[in-house]
Amino acid sequence: MKTLELIAAIRKRIAGGYAGADGRLPNIGEIAKDFSVSPMTAQKAIRALVEAGVLTSTRRKGVFLKQPASSGMARVGIVSMYYTNCTSAAAYLSAFSSYLISGVEILKSTGIRIVRLDRDDLKGKPEQVKQILEELDSMIITYGCLDNDTLPYLLSWRKPVVVIQHEEFCAFPFHQVIPDLESGFARLALFFAERKISRLLVATNREPIHLARVRVLKQVLSGFYAMRDCHIETLEVPSCPSDLGRIAGQRLGELILRTKVPYDVIVTPSDFIAFGVIDTMSKSGKSFGVDYRLVSYDNLEADSYLPLNEPVLTCVGKHPDRISAAAANLILSLKQLGAENRFLCKVPCDLTIRQTMT
Image (cartoon, rainbow, N blue to C red; front, side, top):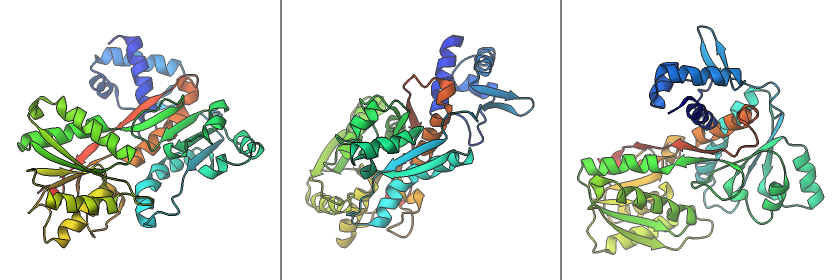
């Protein structure tokens, strides 16, 4: 990789949260290793970014992301939606609030004023919406708030918008931060291969985001040599209004109990669905980790949502706190990185092994 290519790659990585919470970048040796270049090439790229004003170098302390006192981001709007008809307020808060907390804290620590908004605030009378937008310098918005009512305002608003809480890059011309599903499912594929697990029963509802996760899972498994003989059977049920997935999971559990298809592991694209499956299986006297094995996606239990009183789910986790932090750091860095560019950032997922696979 040439120096100019490395500079561009580091810029993109910075936009995705490469710097630590204090703004410090890894040392030259670590950067060289991360990008598979020589320490000399890494040093040249960092020196160029310091000269460009993207980074600042402090003797004996390291290289830091230059925190712009003049970032031009004095007021940042945080736009999310609230499911007032959700069957479980605690479940909703666990699933979605952590997408915002760490990012808000980072922005506040720099003196930025946070303006909290609901999706409905961007769906009022045109003059009211324009007044709201005029008072903001940039915005972090959850994907669910983008619709036919809000998009016209945002597309004509010539200020930075960062979209989070989605798991595929969307076509809209905004900055975006999403979880790297492929990295998490690759870890899961390796886990399955090491244990010679080859028969998967995927249980999902028809929620678009859940179907998208299933699609990526299948793509990763099909491209993983050690899983070339993997057999995947899929069970689907309709989505239910106001249900985050647990009701669907209970219905899927009933289908699983009746299925004649042999399987090694049940895979669900949502912890809520997984909890519903466990509900039904438990009522039938079946215990996870003993009578069946289960893997999910989310890792809500890491955010203290514990419907079974303790963490039990083996799952691929998306780290919404890191996504939120990456979005905040992107907002802070846009002036140095080039606000005219569109940044699409991925945050790695990981795999946590718990009782449902032991």
